[in-house]
Image (cartoon, rainbow, N blue to C red):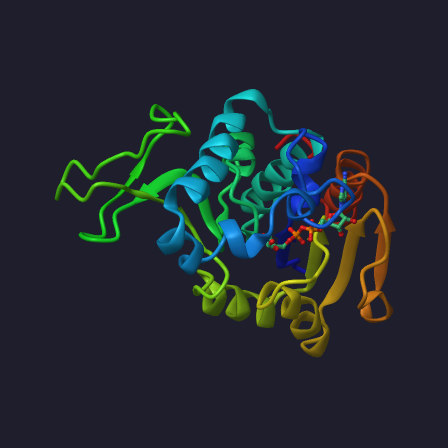
Length: 242
Ligand code: APR
């Protein structure tokens, strides 16, 4: 059997790197009301508050590193590529840890490292302007403040059609560190099951839709995912040195 793998990650895959999750105890939404900092209305109402929230998270990127879960998923991607087998990693996370681990990642909620101009549409990767009190003007059109290029509540997540095509072809679907609270990512598990894909979920506690999962893998991603990748590489006869 030639495997075809789709992996969805959420905040839990970066928790072991020290990046806050959203809905766990002490998570971001316990400290901020998401409607105050993660919606277009919040940006229009109080851009300074929203900017401070994202600038602090942008600055944190320099202090965290990919953990063994990120590295294992990049290794799996390389091993499958050597065998000519399809691999898709889609993440709800806006940190850059998958990319820094070497993965090709579809960032469906955008990326903290990218700023966007609402006036002219220009985007730029930026890790130089991190002052929470200073907006960054658009150097192309002069608009006074670039926004974080992240998908806010009420905005369209990215790459969803592409992921759904890959899910129809997938033999294995793995969700790592996501509560399954936010659509459309929350629907990927059900779509995988409906197309006969074997489903695996790793989280600290069973997700609400755990009953639909073929294999629930409890525990920290940094401890669970490397072993799962080793098992798959061995089971599929892939290169152990990818
Ligand atoms: N290893 C594995 N799983 C973990 C770990 C860990 N170390 N720590 C936490 N988890 C799991 C939790 O059990 C939970 O299922 O990660 C999940 C975190 O859930 P959320 O905080 O809701 O994060 P996520 O599912 O990514 O949120 C989805 O909601 O607020 C929006 O845009 C935001 O992308 C985010 C989306």
